[in-house]
Image 1 (cartoon, rainbow, N blue to C red):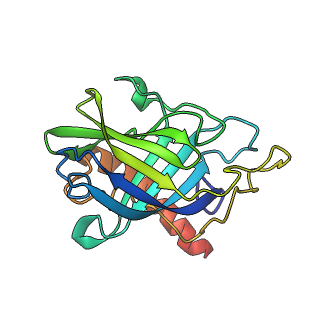
Image 2 (tube, rainbow, N blue to C red; image 1 turned 30 degrees about the vertical axis):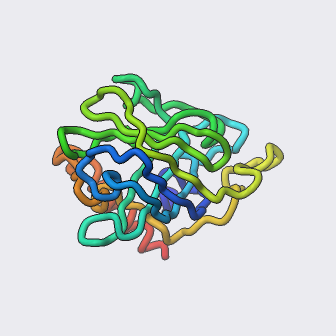
Image 3 (cartoon, helix red, strand yellow; image 1 turned 60 degrees about the horizontal axis):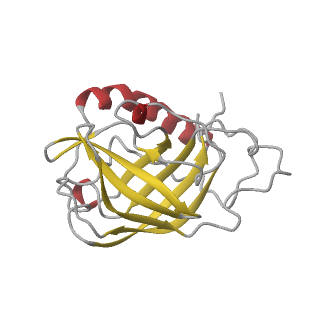
Amino acid sequence: MRRNRPVHTVGTVVPGTLVIDAPGGTGSPLLDAAGERPLVARLSRAASWPVHLPDVIGVALRIPAAGPDGGPADLLFASTGTGRLTRYVLRFHLSATAGPLTTMFPLLGAGGHLVFRLDPEGPGRYRFSCSRNSGPWRGLGRVVLDVPAPERPPHRARGAEAAAGPDDAGLRFRPVAQPPAGLTVPVWLRAARAPAYGLARRVGRERA
């Protein structure tokens, strides 16, 4: 109906850095060696309601040359709980700094299923961690974003169309097709998500 992104319609695209300082034995070269990698992030709200209303918060990360065959790697985070079960349950927040976010759906890596997590430490700064097979969270490093100031629009903005900064209508994340190298999307999850992402991409091309 929206003829663009079905959810997370309005967002803010910013550059940033992924810092790995506690390599984690995940099976992905991106996450299993210490270092820094540039990235592009998009901060958004799922329903794109007015900013004074709570919404499901999204943070999408694209890391160049970290995915399959040397292409980009995409990780999508949403505001959720962090317990063994609640990490799979969406939560409503006012901003990307109001609470933790997880990838919610697992990726297959070394030793089993991996779910990744971001914990806000301040505007544009997040602790980055992972959990294997629903076990304890283990720190991997941090994500630092060059967010605009303020991070989100002032309360006088009435509509979700008032983004906190520049967006990029052509930027489309592909978490099913482009996980970090060394990690794979479970077959059941690929089957469930691919049709919806395919439809959204087709609608976007037709609109363009």
